[in-house]
Image (cartoon, rainbow over all chains, first blue to last red; front, side, top):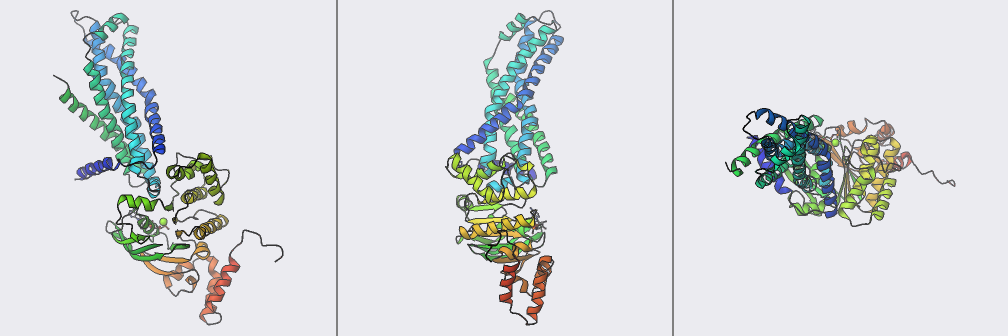
Length: 247
Length: 282
Ligand SMILES: Nc1ncnc2c1ncn2[C@@H]1O[C@H](COP(=O)(O)OP(=O)(O)OP(=O)(O)O)[C@@H](O)[C@H]1O
Ligand SMILES: [Mg+2]
């Protein structure tokens, strides 16, 4: 039963977010602040993960391709497609759910528990609009950018690992990258990253905004926010793949 | 003026506020007093709409706040300043930015003008040289004063203070009490103060509402309070050493030796500690 109650409250929160800002300049400032927190705050971890994902993909693909009938440039092809289709959007977003999501949940939870949200309400500010909307919009802007960066870094990491281990030459790998390239895959990955970005920001915001209690509950809420976001990301990943990928 | 009519509030099956009514006039300090846990904070939060009362009305300008739509509520809220019991400062902002926040949000002033106003209110709460500090670097009493500065920076018509001087030394307490009283009169504010500090009660209590386990047990002024015959109220106020004298005087009054009016005035004048040194020619 509480799940329906939570869904209802979540939808009301989303609806409540859309109201006229009291002061455009302050909202803009908050938006920019969130962009830098979510975007630059996760840059390092996303870069590291992406390079390693690409590297591991290359080595594992090479290990699995034992038949002499398959040209080695196929490795580049497979790495490109797995990184673009799955690893860059999904894995990066799962990591971001942990990094950015828990930050959003604990920031809002702390503001709730220490009555800062009440203080804003008393001033006559719509706290859903002021606190939640900029976070969601900033995520929708920054996370797809991070995903695109991750694609590039992943593919680069694969090339690095492939040449370093002597599995594949640079030119063969690059040739593989150009073979059978389907631009739709990038588009599909971007659709996924928009959906995931919405999940990563709105779910933690919901759990943080409605925290009741004290410091302990803030911790619980942010853990729950991360878990629920991850599950929803994987679920959305499945649904989108089933719907949008021609099989 | 704020009118509270038959407010009830319960959490789960626990009733916290039972049928409380009060009239809080503008230009005076309206105090809600009572022991810890008697429901002062809950009553105040019902008044400002942070808690929805189960039944009853809260009237601002004669209109029921609890029944207003969101836009009208926002309009009233722009006239409200509130100091929370836990200060509720924005901890990502410095002291200066905290106090400036309402100005940035609701005025179109230049930075210079906002800055001047911020320094002015910070000086009024006796807080200088803390502008660039973050809330985590402040003492409890300093946080309270920053929060008060933030609450009054926009010159509210309704000022709510939840225990403005808990955690303050007696001298700073007095400064804060006097500041609250001063601006209340100066701008004709309807001020509501939660407190269990008897010094404040005697210093600023134009109207006093005594809460006992969620009920309105007594109401009156600071002139009447120590002559009240209400046993629960007596237990509450005479727990304070400050009023030992008053209690003695009350004994005299009860036996008909002195008239209560005259001596109350005297007591309030005489015992009020002064911060400004008296002029030499006295
Ligand atoms: N959000 C809440 N949910 C459930 N019970 C609450 C809530 N807030 C307060 N209470 C209960 O209401 C009662 C009154 O609390 P309140 O905070 O109003 O006391 P108070 O008079 O302000 O005390 P103090 O002087 O210590 O601040 C307490 O018994 C408290 O447990
Ligand atoms: Mg309280």
